Amino acid sequence: MTAKTMTSIDSVLRYQVLGSRRFSNFWWGTIVTIGGTGFLLSGISSYLHVNLLPFSDPTKLIFIPQGIAMGFYGVCGVLLALYLWLTILWDVGGGYNEFDRKTGNIRIFRWGFPGKNRKIDFTCQTSDVQSVRVDIKEGLNPRRSIYLKLKDRRQFPLTRVGQPISLSDVENQAAELARFLQVPLEGL
Image 1 (cartoon, rainbow, N blue to C red):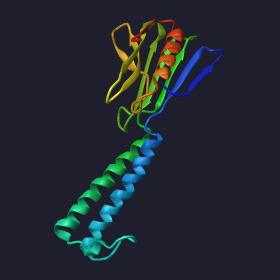
Image 2: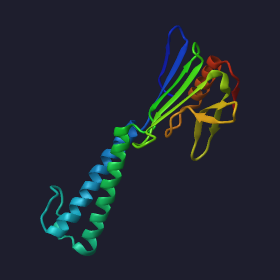
Image 3: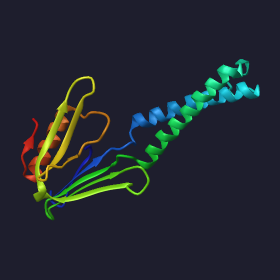
Image 4: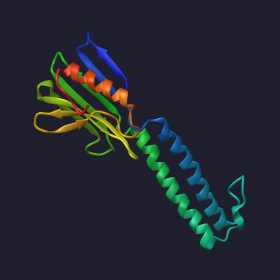
């Protein structure tokens, strides 16, 4: 959960969730696009004996095996870049968490990949919430997440996927949400 918005005299709490439109994805999309295109043009230049790259001369490469390998790496790089750019375009994982104290509704909305289930839209009542749970795991692959735990034992993640949020932010957001919903806080 990132940006917080309180409206209607603090009766609605809304957190924007950052999806795939983050700086690191733009960075890697750009790097992989440049690299994949360079490798692909090197493989094609090796085959056609025409220099398609302004900064090197891949026409001196022997097509079998060097040109084929460069072309293969180029196709893989371009396909990976296409995947990255499409997830950025579709904003996979982006959405919001909305908690309305006045109506008693909770809405968790996320964008997914195109298809039948593109919109992930979950709604429930605040009376169905058992607690707010914090999951903190340190180490090589740290995990710091906030979950909405319902009375029927289902748990819904409320934080973004990817970069871990600072420990103090997780604690503050979880405490604020538990206080807003008037439910206990677990895991701290």
